[in-house]
Image (cartoon, rainbow, N blue to C red; front, side):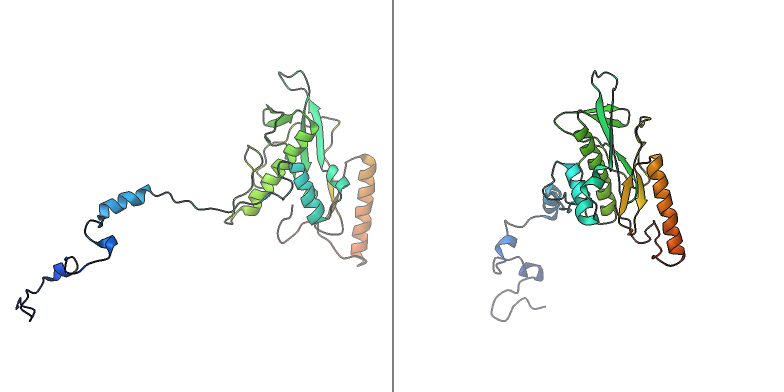
Length: 247
């Protein structure tokens, strides 16, 4: 092949076309700025990549007060009263080893599903005492906040499961899925956990203590309700929701 380009100049070799001073490249690719593949791999390995995964949010205005948060949720979203929510907490005092003064613990009972949540390891300025799997607190108020905090953590974990959101977290101990709860604390003989009785709407219920008198009245009401359902006087209601679980 003729090396003359027709104008009396030597024809450049093909490999010189893209890297010759006769053909200026972009500054970032020009000689002196060219980075080898090996250098590029080293630089790439130094990069830190972060993905901001959205977190399930705490109800605005209730930060740091889990009992207020859970009360607001059930009152505003589920139609419960403040009195009903007060009945959802069962608290007592116990003298634990190594302490001269009794400490408080609490259990929150979901007023819809009846699931019980013991006080979680909720960090606060007045301290937390552990006796096995049970957490105790200086005051009844702290113990109820800790029980609400554990319930809210578990609800958030269950809501976020299978989504691209991170659950919110209020306790230092881990939240758990339904059916995976740790053992509840031993309940004193004079303490009875509330009994959740269904009302005429699947997302509402009344919380009634298991006392003989109220238990008899509740049983009588349930029988009357079943009879009325049987004759078609009121719509038939099933206590278990078929689509979606509510808390």
